Length: 375
Image 1 (cartoon, rainbow, N blue to C red):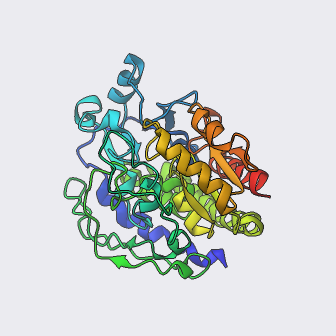
Image 2: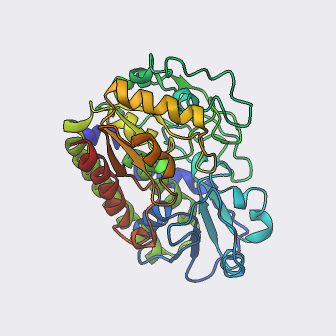
Image 3: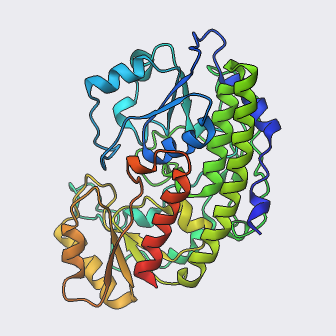
């Protein structure tokens, strides 16, 4: 079943060689800097025995509010490659990488071939009619849930042409690489490309939380391998190719494991702290019913909290998921006195996952968060 999803080949990885800057001054042992633990985990699987991988955001930090330290600046200045999601997530790097990492090849995961991209779900914004006076048009009288189970309609972008002129891969076609199993029932419409919206968590923008689906993780791994391969010596290339083959096998097996574990709870309705898990929830047909806040930095107001309490009481919500990076005050307020469970989903993990094999551990802890609370 799931194996059909993972048809990205080594040939595609090789075709990505245009990502690498040929003028880059490459050290004998290439140095790759990543931003968040899931990316570091994927990179560690690809780069094991090839180069050095480092992580910027540790100890449960959030990319939404991270401030660079002097040591981070030094790490970036010494980097040969920087792998980040994009300016919609790591806002602290937006417009600064050319200065911070002047000799590094910048690999923006949101722009890699083979990704499935989904737009932010409008319902994630429906609970915020009382924020800053600018959400009045998001009336929540009916909680906006007429279409919550219609997330099969999420549009998928085929990524046919991103215009990456600065990396020389203008013509890399982005096939859907065999979405023949549990993803194809979502009927994602394909687009010939996707515009840059800034990824600012606004409805209609592409959701930046791409790493929660193992299929996208594989696409990132393939894109990374294609970017670094031309700069490696023959022995490093052999090791890289072996690593990529192992990643493909491991992530394919992981996809099958996740599908089996989530299937028994996929119909249980739940709320999340913010809409950070769409790629996993859509891939495995989870019954997401909305988010507590539009963004981790935006506190829900009194009207939103009342509406959410009514929703939990009336709509059979089984669980509300908090995140370890943020205080659960709003979730505690919503759940107080109601028959609803509280769980934890960690969309980022910690530095413990930023090692070889860490991506599988990260996904398993995320799956366990769902099953422990929804089961």
